[in-house]
Structure formats: C-alpha cells, structure tokens
Length: 238
Image 1 (cartoon, rainbow, N blue to C red):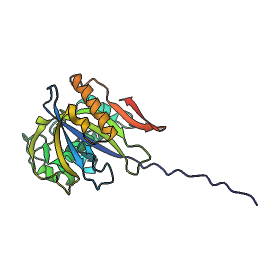
Image 2 (image 1 turned 180 degrees about the horizontal axis):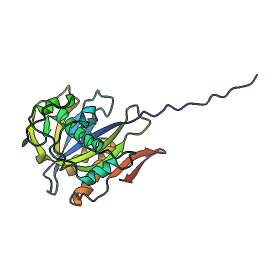
Image 3 (image 1 turned 120 degrees about the vertical axis):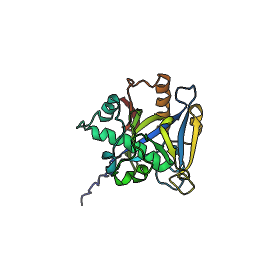
Image 4 (image 1 turned 60 degrees about the horizontal axis):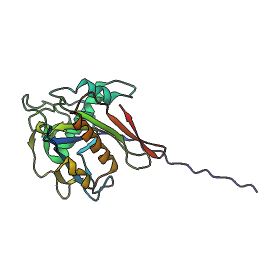
C-alpha cells in the first residue's frame, strides 16, 4: 500500500479594489496644520474602530462625472505609472472617487460653485450634484499609494490624495454618527495624529505627508508606493 502525499493549496489572494482617500488639510502652510480623520464603526470587518482618512472604492460613475478643473499632469502621470494603458480617464476617476467618498462619509462638499452642477450626473454623484457644484481636481496632491496585504480577505489598492481644506465649500451635518460607517470626525493637529488608534499604513502615509509639507508640497517629489512582498512591506517611488 502506498501513501499519497497531499500538498497544501494556498488560497488565491483576493484581487484588490481600486480605491482612493482624501486628506483634508486645515491651515496649509502653517507649522502644525490640522488634518481630518474619521473613526470607523467598531462592527465593520475592515479596520474596525480605527481612525482613517475618508475614502472608498472606485465606482463606474466616477469615470463619467464632469469636473471644473483637471488634474496636474504630474499627478496624472504618477497615477498611471506601471499600468498597461495610459488612459487619463482612470487617473481622473481615482481623484473623483476621493472627493465623492469624502462627501458621502463626512458631508463635506469639495468643489467649486461657479459653474453650477452637472445636468445629468452619474447615479453615485446625484446627492453631490444637488449641492449645485462641480469637483475641481487642480489642487489635489498625490501623497501615496498602498495595497492591502494579500493574506487579508478584503483588499484595496488605495491612492491617497491631499487637499487644502479651503476647497470645502459646503457641509451637510449629521453624516457621521453612531450607526454610520464613520462614527466620529476629528480635526487633529498633525503632530498629535499619531496618538490616535490607526493602522500602520495610515501612519506611513502621515509620515509621507509630513515630509511633503516640509518640502513645500512640491509637485516634483516622487510618490511612494507601499506593497507587501515576501512577508514584508516594501516601498517604491512612482
């Protein structure tokens, strides 16, 4: 009688969802500006109870939403680096995702009201469009990209943007509450943010933000890309 060896089969890694997050900065140019963070509901499966930047998954409608101003060409190039195509619609959609998700999770309206709202907004943008404004991408800085490790059941390929909080033109109160995805919103001084309960990747992005602020938010600085390889986090420059 012969023995048959059974090889363990590793579960296939979940494909990460394209996502984006927005870091709003209050007091840009000051020594210790404030940034907006939200505390996730403790019952959520992904990062329960952690403080995060507002953000979420790219939706099909993010590719079709009208804008008031385009991305900086250097930001667009870094967002598309490493892709097989160089479709600027994808880069723009990522930036729009960050703005839409911030509106949905915080009630903060980022945009300009000079041109009114779109006549026929995509479904995901209808509530935003009721504010009678358009998103403006010109002031966005691409701070970092990070992909959730492959051993986790939920994975996101997130692009982190930063924006002067003066781009917020309106606010809907009561969006963050005890039963919402974000149960609390805090404007915290950047030097005190590390005292909050957050994931390591969020701390890494904060470090990149500090470095960029110290360099005057220069658009010529490379954007770091964090990904998990062979059991360790790796950092590359885009």
